[in-house]
Amino acid sequence: MGKSKRGFRKHKAGDKRREKGAGKIPLVTFGFIIFFVLCLSAFFYIKKWMHDGISEKGISSSERFNDNRRKPNNREEKIAKEKKTRKAVELAKLPKQKPSIVESDRKIFDKEKPKVVIIVDDLGFKKEPIDKLLEIPAQLSFAVLPNLPYSKYAAEMAYKNGRDVILHLPMEPTDSSGHAAVDAGEDVLLMGLPKDKILDKLEKNLSSIPYIKGVNNHMGSKFTESSELMELILERIKSKGLFFIDSRTSETTAGFKIAKKLGIKTAERDFFLDEGSQRSDYIRSQIEKLINVSKEKGYAIGICHPYPDTIKVLSEVIPDIQKEVEIIPVSGVVN
Image 1: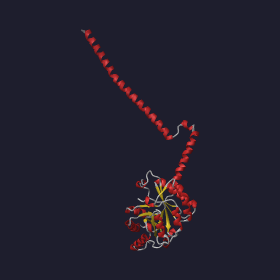
Image 2: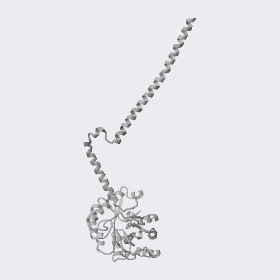
Image 3: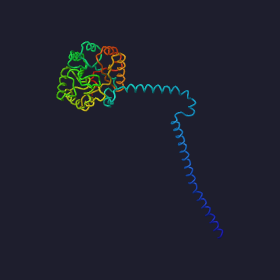
Image 4: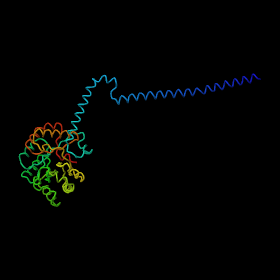
């Protein structure tokens, strides 16, 4: 009986040891899994840290020994950066405070050949420049001054030859522009006139030129700065079904902005092609800028005058530039 009890106790103690040993196995397994996960995490962390370090420094230690092989790439990057800078400088020469091109404007000629508009201002003084301009095989737009000896002739001949005709409307300039109000011409719109007198002069100017599709301002650096007066005349221009081109003779012109507000078809000048200079090289450089801008935004508007050098340059360069851009009437870009 005593032996049986001792045997039973011994057997029972053995069972307890086995149970205790069996309980350690899951713990060991779980601990091994935790260790494996930590090692794996540490591996990926170290790999990411090394990758980020290389990205921040840009060049590894081994690459630094091969610096000579990298120099051509650095030079290429420098050249590309200089080209980009020159391009930015050219675009910076656009008139200040000009509104940026909105998406709807940018899509006017989306996926088409860039368009260029060339408006010739101040027509009507002489017959010869009108005839020479009509010989140029391009859709130049004619901006005709009212009440001049050849104003009607310019409009009629332009119309017969399929060119756009617009009224070059005289407006009061600022004294700082170097012009007096009388220099703008007969029936110039003056700031100090009563509104009914301004509208009378406007009507007289509009009716003096046949076949007009729109209006742009002649001088007017003072008049176009008045939002109130520009709204007055643009309302009348709108009632005639005409568009308005802002010549931007003032940095603070209200013309384009008011025209947009009133829902008039409108656009604004990008470059004067011969302002302040009649040298051929200057005119050519301005035309080149005009082409570059047209490639940037789809179209560009240049204004020039019937000077002999301007007509000569246009005659010479237009066949070549029409390989890059399409010259279209000004009515094709108003929106």
